[in-house]
Amino acid sequence: MPNYPKTSQYRHPDMPSAIEDKRSRLSQWPMIVGLTFIWVALWQDLTLGTIVLGVIFSSAVMFLLPLPPVPFADRFNVYHTVKFMFYFLWKITAATWDVAVKAAKPGPAVVNSVVAVKLRTQDDLLLTLVGHVYALIPGSLVIDVDRPSSTLFLHVLDIPDEDAAEAFRADSLDIEARMIRGFGSKRDYELVKAEDAADDGVVRRHTEWSDADALTQQEEGS
Image (cartoon, rainbow, N blue to C red; front, side):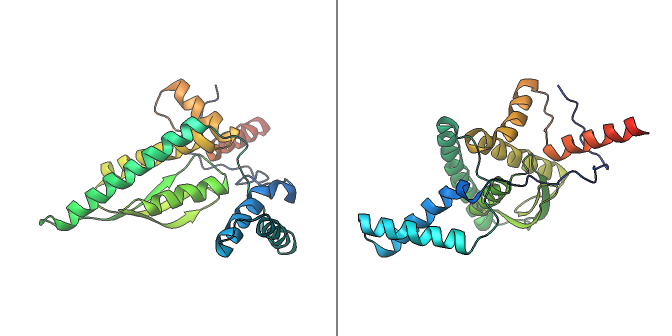
């Protein structure tokens, strides 16, 4: 099993910082399905004619006004997805109660902090979904994203010290792992499986794997 460094200052100059989706526009059929659903919902008319017009309209939008392709994952696990949904609802409920208690309870001022969380994935869609999950959980909000390093910067309620920040990072990485098990790419899932098998508490990240490869090449060339 590869030895994943925790930090590294090296990066191969020719190595992409994130996955580039090279599939054709035909791979974007989930977007057409989603736009068609919105079309039918707006018209409030679930008939064959409305659905056909929705498909035509959605296809025209996708092909005549193209945007960068959305890299959809190549796997989907129903069990882990449903499990994540229930966990997500529990997190929202617990966080809502926690924020309400902190707002109503008299005492010293709550210390808020900006916490940087470096994720495993380099997938744009999953990176966005993780950010939206935290936008929906009370007490945290994404304020910036560093895409090359897959790092989210979150404003978090009640983070008075580094121990609390580290606990929040661990919780964030746990949420990402749950999402990867449910609907992450095979590439990301391999990292989570390696972590589960090693059970050593070390987080595997694609960016650090790339850094390790670049460092090895640099040492071999010197």
